Length: 193
Image: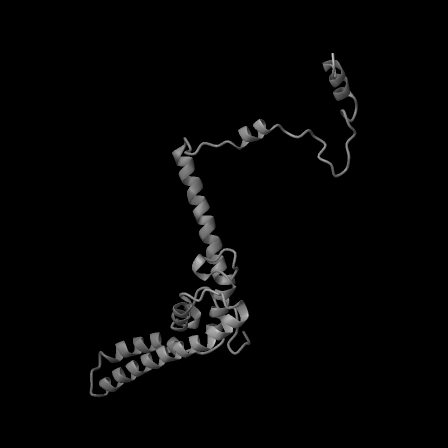
């Protein structure tokens, strides 16, 4: 009685251009029903094909780790691990990378001392004492670096910046040789941070 008849809908659909003429930039199709969309998105919580699920998980992990490795080289903040993410961590890394640190010398020096210890002599005790003095100087150097970096962090990122763990993060980076640091240094030595 009221409304359209089915025959009118069929004749409108068979007309050229359908019920409405096509418009540029428009959707030009009816909106799908909610139940149809939900049915199309529905997936089982546990896949029935375990082998396929295992392979897809493995591929997803590989892709994720590949992106993370590339981010460690390029410094892309989006894919860095949570330990290295954020502008505050980047500033701390850059503050270490722009200068020469005494901690960088420790690993090569330790290898040299290990080789020299094979040829024991009276001078070996002086070399060992020198290594301990260098270790203390490197710790003092990293402490002074943190004391210099902390006010800069607070000035640049605000007083509410969480500084927890940043001192150790900076010290561990200062004790690594520049070539082996990950994420790779993004600034040159002597540059302005």
